[in-house]
Amino acid sequence: MEAVSSAMDKKTMIHVAAELVIVAGVTFWLNGKINGQTDSITKLQKENAELKARLERIEQFLSQATGNPPPQGARPPKQSKKRRPPPGPGTKSEDEEEVISSSDEEIEI
Image (cartoon, rainbow, N blue to C red; front, top):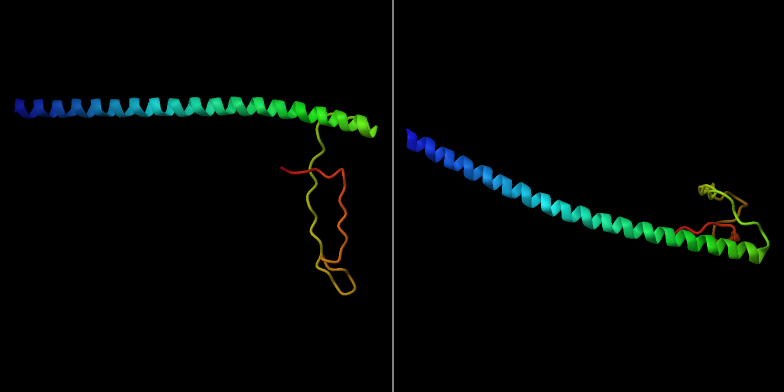
């Protein structure tokens, strides 16, 4: 009876040790992934700050060039595109309509 119990304890210890190795491996792997993501986030935050500063310089240059005051505060919300009704009799189709572009139009990237 002792031999069976001893063999069972040995198998249990091997099983527990294997689980610990697996958990430790997954922990180190996830830690590396998290550190990589943190580095990416830091890089993107720095790039974002540089782009915001560049945008502010461009806006200041444009306001000086046009004589308009620089924009204050947050940007205005984007306007949603309105759906056009289908052309009826006596109206121009989309191909015939004039395309008017505005310098105030916001460019989406």
